[in-house]
Image (cartoon, rainbow, N blue to C red; front, side, top):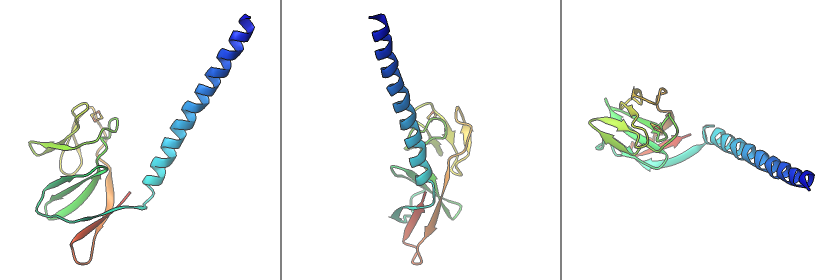
Length: 130
Ligand code: FES
């Protein structure tokens, strides 16, 4: 009886173990595809707003330049969706970034990911690539 219970336990543990690594592998693979340079979005360009928050990215207009950053905090990936006192602030653990995407305050230690983007010929839209 004990041997049978042990076998069932080991089977369940093995399935859980494999499922966990399959999930992690899938997440890493999809993130790689998302960062492979494929087009993510095309949005109207609004240079009147210093910062615009979207689901996956943050558009910053400063010093006559438009930059696009991933909205995922470099600490544990929470979505950054607010600005306080001129800084981008992560709501989860309080990391702060300047408008160049550089870490001002941890726990994050990596800067925000700068995404590839290009302004349309007429200057009215922005194409963002992952
Ligand atoms: S996820 Fe942003 S500070 Fe932790």
